[in-house]
Length: 142
Image: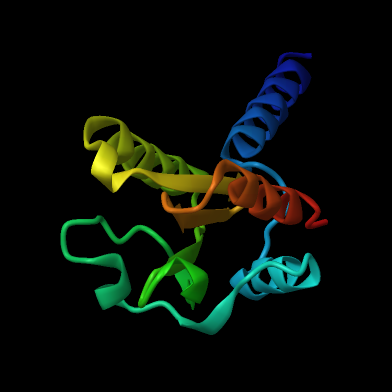
C-alpha cells in the first residue's frame, strides 16, 4: 500500500512540474506571425532573420530565433521584431524589459504582443489603432 501511495504521489508531482514548465501552450514560428500580419493586410516589408545587431548590445539575448521587418510608412529603418523563445520565463522577462523601458523613458516607448512562445516588438510610433490591428492578427494564430 505504501508503494502505491508513493508512486501515486510521485506521478502527481511529475505531472504538476510538467504543467508548470509547459509555458503558455502552443508553439508558433516567426514565419507564422509574419503570415498572420500579411493575411490581415498589415504593413510588413523587408522580412529577414533577426541578427544580434537588430537586438542591440544592451538588450539581453534570450530569444532562440526571430524575424526583423520594416514599416516604411513610419520612416526609414523603422520596423518591428518577432522573437521566438524556448522558455516562457525568458519571453516574459523580455516583455517586461521592453514594457519597463517605455515606462521609464517615454521616448523609448514601444508595443509588445505575446502569443504562445512569440513576442512581437513594435515601434511606439504606431497609432493605437494600428497596434490593435497587429494584436488582432496575432491573436488569430491557431
